[in-house]
Length: 382
Image 1: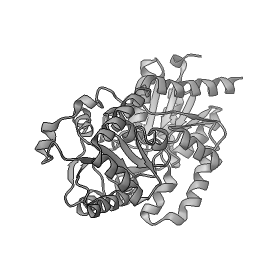
Image 2 (image 1 turned 60 degrees about the vertical axis):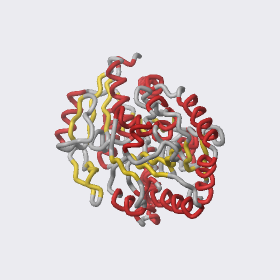
Image 3 (image 1 turned 30 degrees about the vertical axis):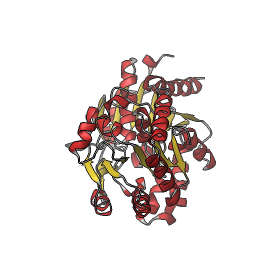
């Protein structure tokens, strides 16, 4: 069986409504599959003005806005219209990317049709709950995810550390890696721009601590701010540059009153912003992969990150950056202060990260998912 023989029905909770790592990965996967001659139809909630143009054929799922997080929508199921569309498309495999209602219904539909199901795992949903004072619900969230994923034929996760978590939580037995790539036309050390830094009030000798992500609490914003406070107490001179947008921006700006916030940016402007940092500080504990760590590495910037799923499989501690125990404010401050005091160390770790980042080729990475599709279809047929 060839990739061109595949007919994939892909169910997403948010294919292009907002711009985040999961959505970019799914769109890149669909683009690769289409270039290889596969047929793909995507089913996802939609909005009038999405954050990005979708790749491929997109069918709108019925959905409702999520309370307090209006930038996302919650799909409400697979209705008769969607079932008719599925029957017309006639997939030979179903891919689900979120354990929501529509994801469950898609799995049920596939099982009724005798089709294999592959699930991609993008987010550690249970780790979000403490940031919204719902930590007591984490065991229930894990149990619900387990019920969902164990109904699928195979899982693909973006890092070995995430695979290990899924195995520990007994989410499934057939779990492979669908890593992430980096766009080398955007992220490149050559995009560093001192004139652009000056336009933001950053002197050539200033040390810039960068943050790149959606600005939401579960990205460790509280830990980031507490670490900056500790650096101030120690008298470590620095500037903070925040790249990204999100519902917690007002809170973040208030806590980082002297931070430089440039909001959301993309393309070459994003590459310039990242390459113009001196260190990327990313204390998030909720990542399945850590795209921004890889993007910083490709830009020749050292990374100080949480030793948690995602970044711990990207950052070579002591060689391309530092991995610090989650929540260890003093440890984060020590790591950053070492770079501020030794620019040669920062540059050396940044250069090492850039070399490591060259291994992440999108086509090779996406072929691994296509291989999983083919393997499960072949197994089912046999």
